[in-house]
Length: 187
Image (cartoon, rainbow, N blue to C red; front, side, top):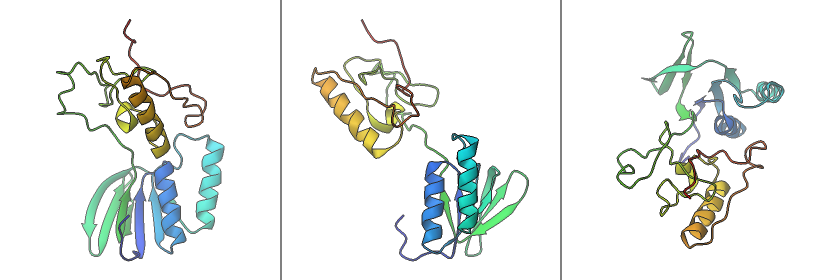
């Protein structure tokens, strides 16, 4: 996002909300954008259909395939899909999701558990499996929005100070009371 000049073309790898937002942003700035990935993979099919139509009307090329390989190319990159289709762009924006980067932190030694993807396990008060430690934000597996990270930070801080509270995730998670990776709360 620290571009000094607008590229002439860009390949956006990933069709989730970040990839869709970035593809549209750059297209509105005049960049020739190709989106590689399934459009809105977690949305209702009708929503994805509307987005496809909007992107087509805005001149954004959508290739709903999995990007398999990225290679440098004169003046940019080539992205090759599973079926062998190749798309070129002066720039590449990767929006394929996030995963926790908790390995090597010594969490096991501290009695802090993680799920299979490396996110720290927390209860509804954001206490980890070590009840003296709280975790907040992206590392806890909460929805990765800045306003959610800010709210979980306040809840974790309050809990650490002996005033436990919770986060209501319903507005961020399609009605789900909490998307966090759970562990049994200590007695």
